[in-house]
Amino acid sequence: MRIIRKLRVVFSFVVVVVLFGCNEAMTSKTEQTTSENTTTGQNSDPMDLEIHFIDVGQADSIYIKLPNDEHVLIDAGNNSDGDLVVDYLEDRGVVTLNHVIGTHPHEDHIGGLDDVINHFNIEDVYLPNKSATTKTFEDVLTAIDAKNLTITRAKKGVTLFGEQINDKLLEAVMLSPISESYSETNDYSPVIKLTYGDTAYIFTGDAETEVEEEILDGGADLHADVLKLGHHGSITSTSEAFLNAISPTIGIISVGEGNKYGHPNQEIIDRLMNNNVQVYRTDEAGTIIVKSNGTKIEVGTKNSTYQPNPVETTTEDNDVTTTTEEINEITVVINEVLPAPKTVYTKEWIELYNTTSSNIDISGYILDDIEDAGSKPYTIPEGTIIEANKFYIIEFSRMFNNEESDDVRLLNSDGVLIDSFTYSNTEIDSSWYRITNGGPWSDSPTDNPTPNESN
Image (cartoon, rainbow, N blue to C red; front, side, top):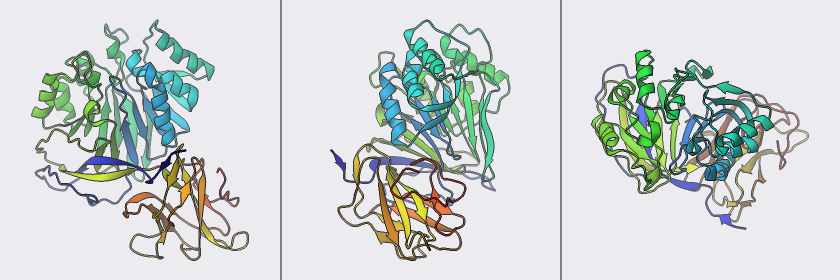
């Protein structure tokens, strides 16, 4: 059985930090530096929105983890990508997909969707009003029928979700399809705008210029910071007018290396460059991960040598700083915390959980409470291994505040934060816990803790 020596898979992240809401006009700047641990931005809110543009070659698959701990999947690559997408989601602790969108019935978008639907708990499924006679499409319908799921038609005006999270708007709305009779199947792709706080993101599937013109004619607010380009960067999409209306800082292209279609089209690349858009491509960068706290945005890649097209940006209200640093993909999480023992338990304890299917060596990792304050940090001893999908308990005396709120922090041996949790109050012999292993946290503690067992 293989052992992962480090707690995480190391990403070389090109981090683009975008700060919003300035009181006066500013001249933006793009700076590139290399640093192992770089702090950027003033806002300390957690980067609790994650958008993963999964590298599925000449295809599309986008996984979104929302700040409310819900999970969204837009497309699932080709037929051969089903297992890859399932494994990717499993590795991130996904048990339930709250919103699944198949943009249109082409194999490079819905090919792996049946595998995903068969494997996970599914709440809502969205498909456009466009069918196909292919086995790929029939397999998706069969998977939907097998779970007695209801299809919601993807069309203009459909709201996937909308709520306030810590006084920040979290919303996703479909801007298309508008017509019921497009000549191109690609045009049935829903264009979706996701808003979180002061940041916005647009996903286009394979929607082409006819749909772009319809959206523009409808007067929708298209401004967004991140644009996932339509149709893999083909000349059929991303018109000058559409791009100008969005005015993105970052453009993402999901495309296969050396594909026979010539994607992305050089004219589109030139158009992006001329509009000062930083371009990230999965064929060059691998999987691309965008993170945000609703105020700033970080963009990272798995390719340690990848740099986006270096462009100088100038806008009136954004300050853009680019740095290169190592960011960690979490594979071990804080799973349960008991901060106030008395009768049933004699010591405080923390339960860690290995979310992966491999053993993980966590030697030298650190557990702490308040950053730069509070109790002395605890260093995990050398030779400590958490088996695949298993737990590890650490006991303490007087690590935490037993009466009020406190923080629980897990850091790697370099002092980089891996995971954290803040509890708001304590109850004697009760624990704060994730509702499912590696999943969202409970809203209140339980008087039935489960150390070394599934929550």
